[in-house]
Image (tube, rainbow over all chains, first blue to last red; front, side, top):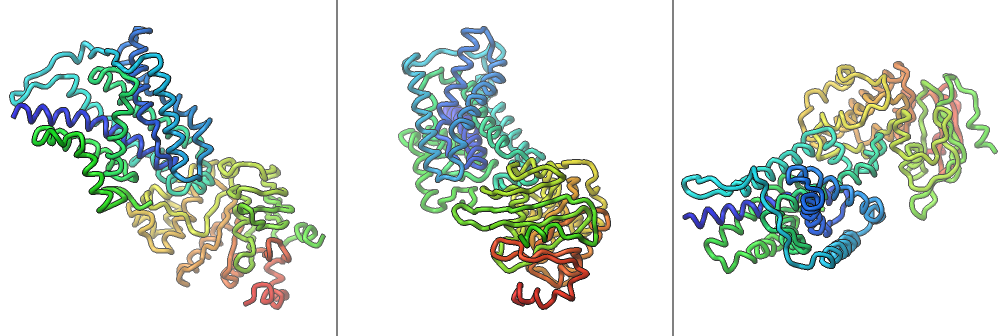
Length: 287
Length: 247
């Protein structure tokens, strides 16, 4: 039983990253109509910013949770202003190819300077150790990642579904021309939305640094699974991408326990099934 | 040019000119839709653009709102040239637009739809007055925007631009596809707004409806304004009008 709980925890942690990343992808897709393939590279940059802050500036993990998303978010907004905005109105394929190219360039640059092996980033002192829950031993940092990710996901959901700013976002997703004609600077809102989605990726990168080490290809490995998660969940829904993210992490964890051989492929098998049965995804709206 | 003179005609309800459109040309992609539109609207007036389908009435409103990609000529609003201004800035100058397709957002509930357009200047209608004008909306604040009936959606589309403080409203075919009793309610609303000092530029196919609210008419045909007259000159112009509109 211990092993089952341990795998469930690993599943929840992976699910946290899936949720944060697919949430950002959903937000970006909604507003910009772009399938942001650079997401994994930006997640990696978040982890590297945390690493640099600590090792070059002596700035700790807690500040990195705030600063890395802002810095990487600004980098994303520059990408949007200088490149992505020109793709508005074109087929999805263009955005996908451009962001894929950006991902390769960014990852290539980091690989050039840091190789492919991981750089260590230690767990902050306050979150070291673990607690015995009776049925299992819970490393505190891992519990923190799950809870903090959940809070961030729900806060993002609240921002988009329940606030005036979110109403602008949702309305502009449907009809940007009309929202602009009401007096809202939609191009600026699009840039900020991209910054928000990218910031979520960078935040996930900081969270993952103490668990998975900081590696130039950490995002490339993860993003393939995340895209499968997005396909399964459907692009249209914020809550859908959060739930699907966590659920698929758990399903992966369970598979690791019951049938480890399939644990790396179960998500893709589900993706194929969903594509065949409901191509818009479990919670997605028809495009 | 006959058209240029048309724009300068003296009118019955003579406030200051708030909108002056001269030689407006507009394109949708490659197709040239407006070929030199000239007209004006004075403060406090209800001016109606009449014309057949595809004459360029909607494109004219969209050009004033700044949502048409390519436009040339001159559009002056409150003595400011806005031909090159982006639509969000035009809205902030106090022009509000109610599109033909109504533009109710499906992912927003009625309350969110109503509160969506930001207040651009003081003097908008408070919510209780809006609910007096449109009591149905108050009952349905929590419904999804597109779950409303066509008439209710039209009311919501008008109601949401009354909050913003814009005093110049452009309504594109507000009666299209609606039941007579609802058309009547919209007519009352327009009359009431006019009495409160709103200036309204209306596009209508329903000439009978327009004649109950308009001060002046312009006839749009093939992307040009070809005629214009005041409501008081209506009976004298009936024959011409029938020819223009083909009714």
